[in-house]
Image 1 (spheres, rainbow, N blue to C red):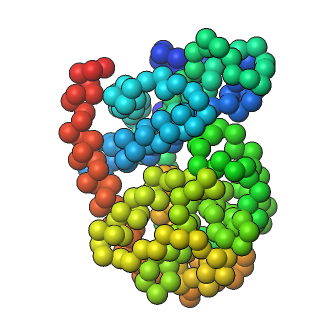
Image 2: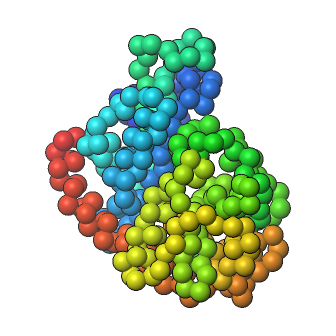
Length: 304
């Protein structure tokens, strides 16, 4: 099945993605007035395709909706059931599920419209395997001043600032752009950033300047459970450039090593030993989380 042949969920109905339509007056289209989530799904054992930290994704969706004052149109159980249905409707062993909620369609006016139902859209697409060379050799990144808005903690569909920074990386032959604001690390254009110094993981604290990543939390939880020292604090640009190891994390990339920054090597220019351990631990965490999902599935299917 090609991704264009997928079945999507739109405002309570299942329909072919190719024929799904929304109003041109939808505020997501006109204003970027909405929020979204992306949930990775992987086959971690034969016959079990499971999302990673599904409840955490929907909890973040709830926070984003509350931040922009859109009522959550579904309960947690409804969201989980929708996610299960999307996975089962598509054959791909690895999927990414995209969910978007906008304020809905109304006459164009900046102020919130009254009595308008949110637009709810969800679709699954194939999630290609992470290229082995990215894990074995690492990726190159460039840097840029963080010029985005001041509510990066909201997973808004208004992503033009991130789009421009991602294109900056592409224009310079790099994988990602790592961002600094007033000399301090924030994040990358579509990932969180971890610094490793002498075996300690150093990462910026959650704030309005970075997205509270689900994988960010997972990496810190794994590190602490394995006895790795973690420091959550402001991270100076110089610490990033002189790091022993540098990682990116996101739902779609899991954890990736950065081995070059602005053309200069990070550490010895190869993925470091702590990354290799974290990558293995992360796969184990996925398997453990998949078992929790497996235990939920019977109830979700009954509810559907």
